[in-house]
Length: 592
Image (cartoon, rainbow, N blue to C red):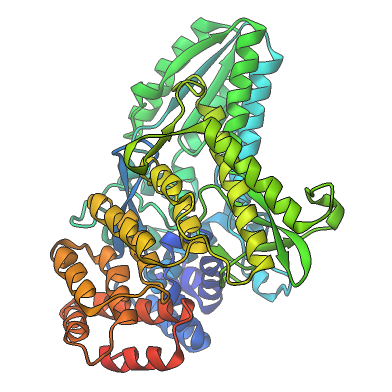
């Protein structure tokens, strides 16, 4: 029988931690990633891995409470708690998931025909040998967009191809937040052969990671954001998936907590609904009654409408192709409607993500002239704007409900907005190619502000403002107005302040003083990051307000203080702030 130290070596050896670091570095979710921590840890990677491994194996490692914040859901007024683990905690969490995933890879694949969320990448089965592979991608999961497309396509086909069919649709209420640790550990121990030493370690880890920005909730919940949480959530529903597959539902599909079942027999689905509710309650979960229904698609028309609705939803998550010119060559730039920060294959932060294609693959104006293409795309944008939106008083734009009635044409409206963004990006990028310094002044600015107000979860609107508009007083004032308006959404405020920190904005000392006085008292730790950044970039170290910000940073507890300093320096470098300015800030905030 292995002693405790040997077990810990199997999970936290230097090779395990190196693999976990490479996987964490490539995490696609920018909001759940310690960018500055990754850069610092990697600067002395071998020694840092060795030190962390020794502390873990000798039981001298103590996890640190992560940075937590609220982000908006698509449902207006709803929020979810998001978690950013610091780099060491993220590596440790990933290392545990890596080991369990590798040892249970084939077992977990048994549900792949029904479960389409967070499916393990083929590289996972290789385990530690992956480090020796020069061509390794170090991905933990398959591409989520491809899996979501499969889920949607199968659901749409099931409805379109079968007459007089019934569908049971439901989801799990507050899935990640309500997973009970004791039941998760029981499954890990009994079904996935996880040693007790790791269960005890994971229990301590999850208790530190649990809760909200202001409270710990021990014994319940997986932190939303970190990659391993998705993995453990999948394991938690493994037996549940098998039980439904075993009942003979060849058309049982699940994506995260969204569940679809199909049958020609309505009574069978009614009884299955009760069965699902019982099975979920057995593991401490609850069916969301507001999102649970059984529908019948009798007519061909109803099947076509529903299938189209499902397939249209895919476009919300698929990349948008935009025309761009790079080094004199026409390319398509892939962006997302709900984009996160973009990374290259090594996991490094990128400012753009370009995909070269052949000229004959691109949409072109018949004349082949770029200026004609700009004119054509702009006309399309203006026409679509008039069709989709209506301007009200005070520059507020709203949905044209005469054409896009609420609920009835919701998917068509979302597709139209996607096209609106695509046309505008295409025009803007082409204009920037013909004139490198081109930026919009105020044209169409109210449209993007209005759309963002209506969908504050969608960062793509802020990306448009940051990328394509001059950093003048009009944009600044509108962003400050949004900052004031969304005082209840710290994620939104953080993203707005990131734009306001741009070096191209001009601020007077009195203006910065007024901004500070208006907001400094009630900021969360997460909001402080980008809020302080504005002053670090736009004030001289000799200014008294600069000293005030430095003092506030220094008054934070040590880990938070260090993270803020690391984050500010990292972000200043990313924002192309001068080396001289960065060195000044580093010296004054005491960051070496």
